[in-house]
Image 1: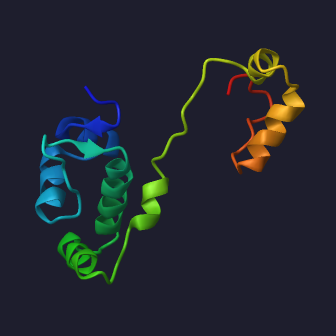
Image 2 (image 1 turned 90 degrees about the vertical axis):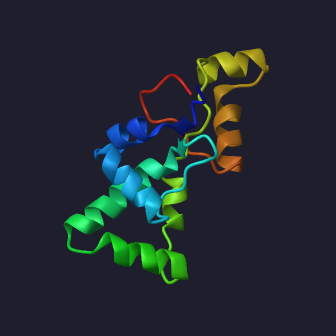
Length: 124
């Protein structure tokens, strides 16, 4: 199983909707499965947003038409599902291994514009 790919059932469960709803969104072109019928993690947010918009009275078919014509984009959702690689090492462990201080590790994160670890968290 690919960790970044989801089956219809997995996508339905994670997005809080049904398998039938996922199929409808795929049939309308809102979601696109790969050759093996799997979806991306970003599709979880996409399915949630489209379902929420439908609950607010915006027809799913109208959304599909607007997306297909280019008058609407959900591209901003692409970054919502991204997860940065995780490590089982703490900043202190990495700093010791690389002969740097924790201060240097944090400065590096600022330099690459990564979010620093939350206060109180010891794992990166």
